[in-house]
Length: 501
Image (cartoon, rainbow, N blue to C red; front, top):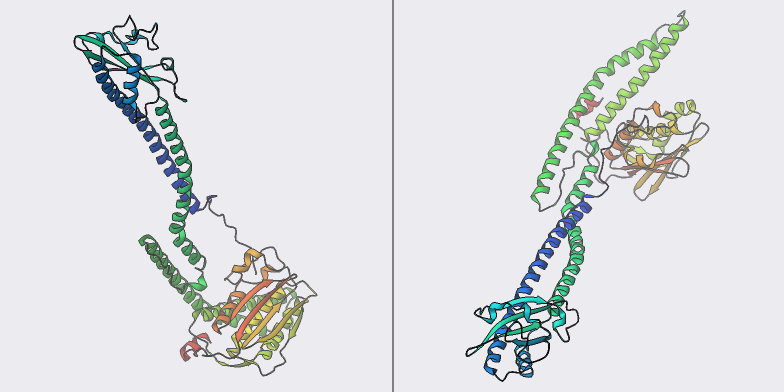
């Protein structure tokens, strides 16, 4: 919680998730294919149904013509109706009208004054030498009682021979069956065109969920891919070769980043060690110089140099501590450290800064004075110091910073609370990252963004945890450390201890 917030421009993002987009594409593609297929099927069905109807009408008219030919010359309307009825029985040609003509001018051979079928529409060749049947579409007025829903009357004219006599049979039915079949087919296809996209949407949503599930896992892995977690190998269980390859590539990238951070840590450690001696030398010289008779402006300059050298020295010490904590090879020094002494020592160490900021430090110790921690006392005190100093930077003047100890079974809780403005909710998850910042808060420019990261590293090095939460007023940092380590961390080698010294 120390400096200004970085300004980043996020790339434009789709308003819809990948799963939703895959589902929509599935529905669109399926719907287009289904509707096109339904349209082609409907056209094919209409054509095939019409052909079947026409073929059936021609076949039945041929049977009726043969039987009527045998009944000539004693044919009459009742006989023709009976023959046509028997012929059409069992097929779906609807109600009918049958008639027989000797020529195209004299009308029906049955002798009615006027037939319902106009003989002038009959091709004249059928009365002379053409035996090929002629199929046409007439109006419903040629039928006595057309079926409901009919619009036209398909009619076939066929030559009938009896000896030397040549007649023409006219058989008219209605198209109600055809239209009913078309309507039924259209309704079925329409229902399918509605149900199909819905089913495609459900199936697409499920399939897309299976497809994007590994990416959701990879997204969770990517969110955890931080400098402090680069040692964890990226593993996503998936049978998909694409996801396995992407996981492998991400793990290679993680390894490259880890190596880059390790090189950066080594460089930082080396540079810090190199500049530590010159800083100490300049600080000693500034502090020991004889100031008697020195002009005022030189005294101001010396005070400024001393102050800046102290700050620079503290920054270098922070870098070295962070490098030591990030090294992860173990704790250099292991010794018992009373929990109450840890808080008391931290309060004594931070008291000058508390006076400078007009903040009151309120320690609350344990009743059990024998409760001890095991670890590096210097690191443990640095951990608590960083939390206390951080709280004082953001605490308003004339308020209190409380350092409270609490024991829960085999766990010691060190809780540091302040009465400051708290931490924005969107920064709580990243507040322990190196150089983490909170903009727009008082005194935020006094730190370097390393204190909380160092505190977390020290806590984890001692097999503990650290967390933060906002209160109604201010916030609370909470460290949890084991009272007795089941397997104390192994001390670092003497060479490592000498290096960190």
